[in-house]
Length: 425
Image 1 (cartoon, one colour):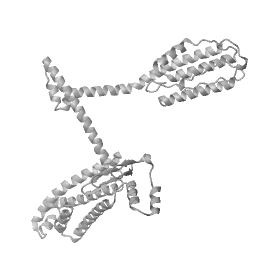
Image 2 (image 1 turned 60 degrees about the vertical axis):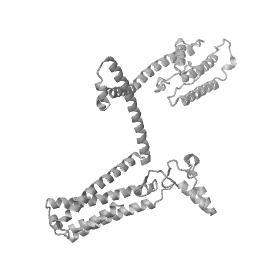
Image 3 (image 1 turned 30 degrees about the vertical axis):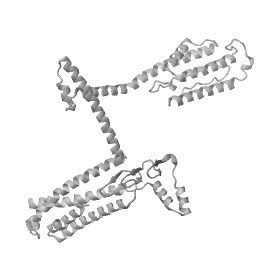
Image 4 (image 1 turned 180 degrees about the vertical axis):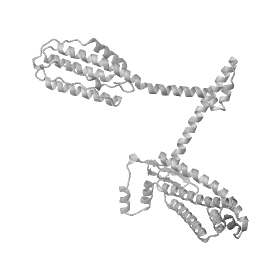
């Protein structure tokens, strides 16, 4: 605000009189005046727009209001308690991204920062106006600098009638010196405004606020400091060991000042690269594990089919081995499925007249279809429960037995078995 009237005075006293043509002076001064008015208007609207949190505003209005209609209106505008947080300073609930500004003494909706140049907080309600102010100020200062550079370059290279116009002005050749001085001031000011503009464009692309950027930056600085302290401790210990062995410590001492020459830093980068390579190779191991499990499960399913067709009472040895292997690896899904398969096998044997306990059961054949459906439902329910406990996985489908006359089969489709990244089936 100190430079703004100073720039206006400079332009009207030194730039406008430097144009001998009245038309050129009017056009250039008119454009400059429009940019100045637009900058002032943007800054003013940013200041008068209250960025207060909406819930706090309703709370204060309800507190100061005595109208029953207004109270009912505020009650209807209340937010879900789960989507709010409590401000102990304002003594009310506010929106999750609202923060309390100690300068303004109020909670600001989606707090960005407190602008000392505008003497107001910038939040969700007035952030776009603030960004508009930055753009308008950038254009205003940039246009002024462009006119000054044009006059200075035209004066010394004698382009057109610029030198004659300046020398023929009311101040004569002395007019060029304040134009040069203000050109330097304008260049520095424009550089600062450009940095601010680029910074806020970057924040908008990332979808974060200035406050969130500062918090993230401080956290990163703390992590970097911890990493540096850890490397310094390792360097001190390594230097002491090398000195004890009589070896040179030049590289270690140089690494404290030259990061690319630091052997400890190079060792850390090598470890990170190795860890990254092992992470990329992990799916190959998972694929190999998947193929081995698929083969094991295919063999077990074939033995189950042979056992069901022959009506024997013994469980295949490979299936027992796979069960023990699953118990060791913690695969609860297969164990639960095998338990239910036992019951399905017992129903199948009962249907064929060969019960597991050796006794015949005439009533067992009567409800075979109902038993099949119940067993299939139990298998699906157990598998779904195990999937919910361990995360999403692919399904294992057991096909029910169709009829008593057909050969008893339990099919286990190899395409329905997958191995997750954590090793679970």
